[in-house]
Image (cartoon, rainbow, N blue to C red; front, side, top):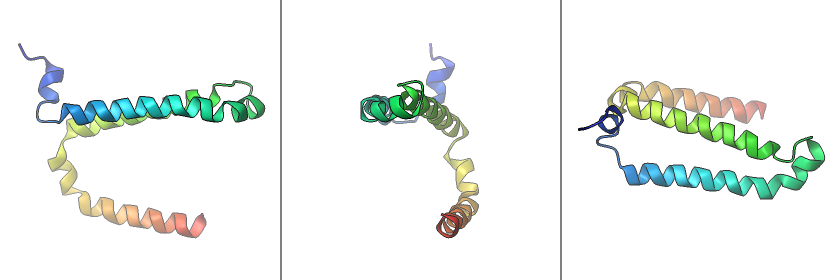
Length: 97
């Protein structure tokens, strides 16, 4: 019997998905020892950067699954507008820093 989650992930490369999640977790755990001294000095909690990176990683993984559920065909319809928006944002960052 196929569950709803397996049906939604059907057609996706699970190996790549697992590698992305594994690399995200690896990156989170690399942030902690690299910035612990700075976090202890600048913030009251030594794990400030670990918590912050974890929150952004969870938000990114949730966004990943939302984009996967929506599907490529719907994203292709607005690809041109997304490209124009990206270029405009790059110009904005170039001007305003």
